[in-house]
Image (cartoon, rainbow over all chains, first blue to last red; front, side, top):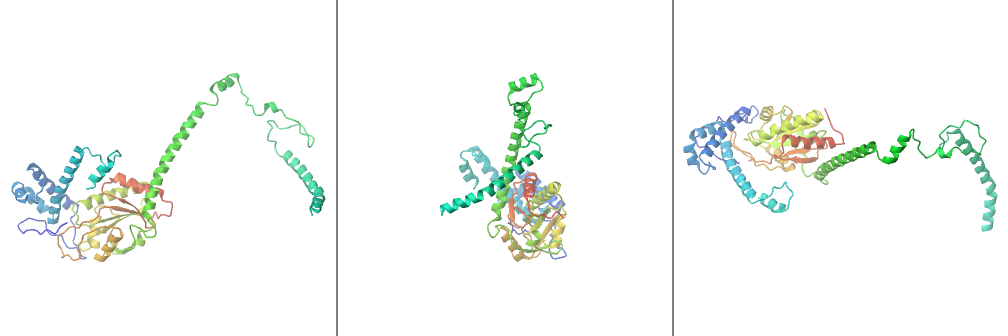
Length: 125
Length: 292
């Protein structure tokens, strides 16, 4: 996923500490929780301002959700920030597709009813 | 020729008949020494050989009732009674339950059998890694117990931690059902550049103390991922301390005590559903299993 460089102006958590055997220590449970909290409050702000894709609408998000974004970026590694932003878009699109399918009366794969092949073809997308 | 044959037969006749005569008498004696089968009362009177006194035939084969009421109710209800009805219902319920159970078991056996493949296993195979204590770990070390194998990396934003928490839940539920020793849980890193034994050990301790972490050289990890049909995107040459993510397939691989692949458990499974799958497979296992 991530090959996204950080611009120097952005706040970011301290880089992972090297371990004694040459690896790099991953964020622990509390660091992850902190990052997820930052993500959630930033996403709530995006929801309030009707922004789905905070990568494409970077300027707008930076202007409207500046404090949340700063907190988010200071708690999560930049690869994680990008990942969560993209995942939000992906999940939105998935939900939209599901909604569209439900509106069209498509049946889910689990139910064995007529037209299952059509639903299977659609959900296979 | 035929004449000489019949003569021969005639000559043999007396000896055969003598034999049957003795056999006959022997049988008579034998039947007398045993308790007679078709008699309700033991004979008290002495009898002469070969001339048994006919016993009371009318008392045989017909049931006697103690009272007239009993006989009447018997005649009214025929051969049906509440005991017979209960027995019928119990047998029906028992058979239904048994057939459903067998059907589910056969379905699981089919899954396990289908995944065994012919000749070469479809998933799994030889590999060589280093566990989080620095010891070598190969496919041979996987045998003896059921194994739950998960691929991931410690710098994973959200999916791996969620899945590892689920793994810990599954381990507890299997422990509850089958004891502590039957399932071995393994975490294999797809990010050997950052995930050294020390890093993995510290990381996994937060999820469950019994998860054994694995890493290796980039090539060793590549090989095990290939064997398990796991896609991963770790670049082979990364700078120390570089910030990147690893894309990888998200499945739990259940392997049987012979090291054969049984079933893949996806992210859509809840802890309860996944534990049930594992517990059922373990219950079906008829071979040897190391419970230590």
